[in-house]
Image 1 (spheres, rainbow, N blue to C red):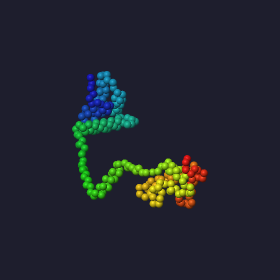
Image 2 (tube, one colour):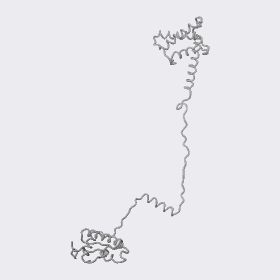
Image 3 (cartoon, rainbow, N blue to C red):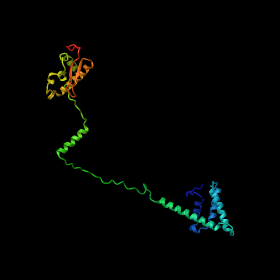
Length: 253
């Protein structure tokens, strides 16, 4: 059983190993001895019934041609000459040897994670910032109010106030219009405490506006039904009301 430890990858690797057995400089190796050693290796491999790659056989044929060219008399017609071919082979073997030595040195270097290790990540500096606030009471209250206004929803409270509805105004005018024979100002149909001059001061101001608006709408509604007449002598003059002619004096519906 033959065990290949070197792991030759081709005929050049085999030639390089055989040249090293000569223990001489690659530039001074004997091509004839090298060819003889290579052919002997191939022959022994055949006796062991090993399957040889085609590259090995091609190299064997080429080396046989090279050896015959070196042994036989020189022929000027042959280009390149056997000496040039031998020199090219020596250069290729030198390059292959240099690459194998460089690969060996590279694999012999220290490896990260096995022989050498990265240093830990530096933690850096921790910066601690301290703030010092300076303000007076007014600034503090203003800031607090701004925060509160942003965080709390605005709530609008509608204050309940006293109003006169349209139904109340219709009922009041319907009862009073039968007693108003002549043209009567619309304010006369308001409640007594809201009808005079200067009425509407204080708490009843809102109620007077509501009563006046409801009375005006009630007058328009009664005029639409043909129960009252409305007159205004000039722009922005007071509105005058009276019962439509032919209507009962008591103002009944």
